[in-house]
Image 1 (cartoon, one colour):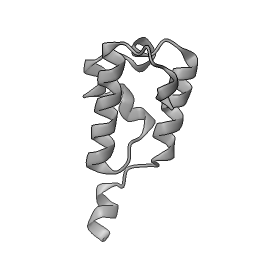
Image 2 (cartoon, helix red, strand yellow):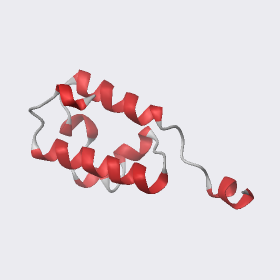
Image 3 (tube, one colour):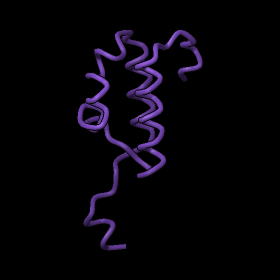
Image 4 (tube, rainbow, N blue to C red):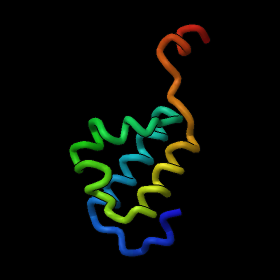
Length: 77
């Protein structure tokens, strides 16, 4: 999706790299996670991405991965 935004700034690229890494580690991510650490170290989501379409696209990507399994679900498996 973000190939349509060739002019991403350095902070936006860092944010997306971190998102990719977090998804690779856990297999999922929730929207609320984007507002906490480690993402908050780069700034609030709507401050890093000021273009509404970019934010909508980012949230759609996150939503496509679904919820992270809870520790109870992990123990039960």
